[in-house]
Length: 443
Image (cartoon, rainbow, N blue to C red; front, top):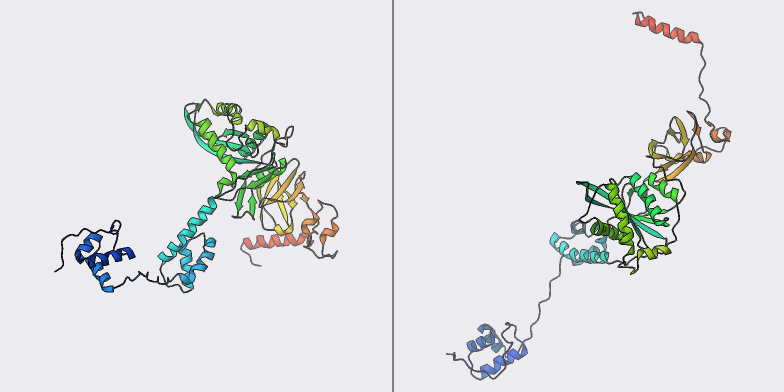
């Protein structure tokens, strides 16, 4: 019978009770204690292991190192490379990837695919969050955005829209409160901001509101501009630029400007009226916003503003905002406006276009692009034609090309339709026959 009396071991056993996976030193301790007559159960209690572990090691005679079992292959192994390549194209959607590799012969479950895609998606998000601060030179770029806030005006809470423009180089800021974000308000706020700064920049960066961009793709290769806003940008000569959708930090300067106005100026304040709000807002810009040390430039915006070579708009006629007239291009490549008809390139037949009036002229837009410009015709039922709009529509034969007979713009190039000339007696006979039939007669 094994001796159960505790025995004091001269060996240092500290740290040997952490688990049953015995190291070489622990194995040697078991042999030493056993050779000194210590019982197996006592050794197990001393080392904090199961007695079966002690017996197994004593039976082995010599220590056998632990060998980790080889991990079995996964059903996903054959598809890992394909998943890594396809994941960005489907926005790391595990369900879509699961469906695709099932068509390739994958017989495993959805959970394996989800666990595989999760770290790829997290890594992509980390990469998207990484950014480089983009700075522009003096007079190069400004950024525009809207903010919205409930403001106490004369004792009533009113939803006020705050227009904010920030100059990219100097961080000079202009803000103005209005009651809507419609296109006329947007255009008027631009002109007021340019008066405030003393001019405009070469380009302006925007988000993607419908007042500016009617439709676009993610990469920005195909943009359908709002025709009125595009006409406005051409009128003043600046270049409009759009942020990538769902990436607001592209215009981070004005995003910060909107927050600054809300938190520093609007917070906790009330006003007698909207006009009073704008008066106080201009005073705040002059006395607070423009004279502070900016956190990025470490200079005052009012000082850097002197270095901005802005393009002055002083003395110009303000842009007249007019709602575009939607029109359908007829089969003869003409667009009808106030009974007069104006030509467009024949490739736009059947397409929807927008007509915008200017100073004594009109412009016709298709998906934001100006495709024709004409002088406004006086009178009624006039035609204004441009020969280039019909190029390639007719062969170069004089007999079949009516445009050869119309050297001047505005002429009607189309030959009159052939109408048979009949005697009035023919029509009288027809009318008499119809009257006879109505009276019950027969022809």
